[in-house]
Image (cartoon, rainbow, N blue to C red; front, side, top):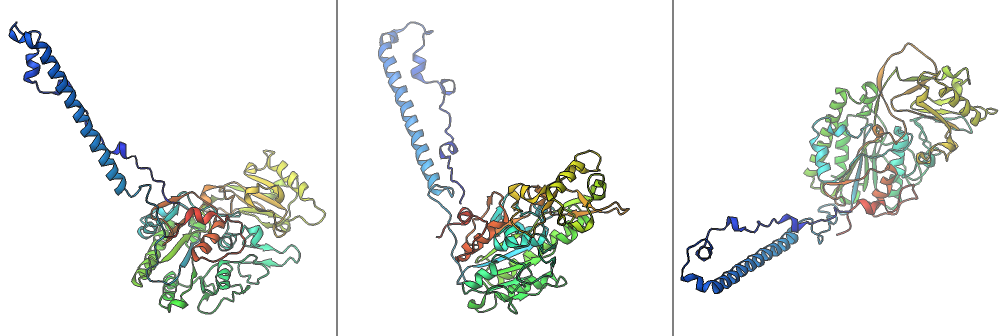
Length: 491
């Protein structure tokens, strides 16, 4: 949607105030009409003089008013015709200048909390913002606000309960087999990611590191040269240069969809929290990389043709060991053995063994936490997964353990007390917490320049990309009408 035109043209042209009698220079006609003057023969012509003066004055006022309103009318009409916000002007998508079809480059800066873009000078990121479209108060991640669930939600348009990656680490409830971030078997990865959708339509896709991209699934085989095996030691500059090299290929071989991933600033955020100078340095490096990318695209004459969508997967909040909740402190009410716990923090997930009712576990844990006798107990609330707030969309999968604990921002859960004392950063909390928000910045022919849009959940991005590429996507949890509210109409 474009900016609503509101040309208040009548108010923009200020009329000079009409002169008052106090500001008028004296005239001989008025001087002759003076009741203080001495008697003379002029009194004989007083009635005709009064009539003449009145007619003259009325004519002058009428002429002045007509001239003023004519000036106002024509000035307003001219301003309306030339104003860029005229109701007759509706922005349209811009034509491709060099490429023969749309290309989308999806970039993730892991852990790029919304607001980081203001920590230091980021001229390249702000170039994209000022000439593109930005989620004004950030992109909302899915719950849990963790790396793998969110990256896969971005490329499938599905909530974790539906795409299967419900945590960074979890167990298959039937076999007990563990899922880790190195698990590439297709049985774990449900839904249809964008690279598979693109290939299904006879187009090419390329992935430079993205959770799920190495999985051979459907029509996607992670082809050599178009699908990079994850290796965190690859320098960021090399990653950017590889993407740029795709634009040196013959037109028909340029991938229509590409991904690019950076581990920063998440890496630093976990170590030092969101407010350390290391974060500022990491953001400056990401901005430099964006500058390298923009410059390379400009050299090839395709910068204005390529759609760049820059996102993060989640935000970051500072944590310290004084903000801890220990499960062993609940022992007077209920024992929670370590082998019941699938994850502690920031998402507490418990799968009680057979014979232990999840409802009883929840009731006893909440009784303990509300007793006032458990340190920081009020900062943890435990639910059966089906009783979680529906906005979290975190129940419709057997992979999700039956007991889930929501932890307040900045707090952590551990099994038992220790002497360890450290501060750092974490994410994974309720996605309604503002510190969990990340960025959405989009620049390209179908995005309006300088536009701000309301925050939205990242499950909408899949439909946005398929709309830009003009291909039919798979079913998602996103809204089919969302792209119409964000993208410019065709020219």
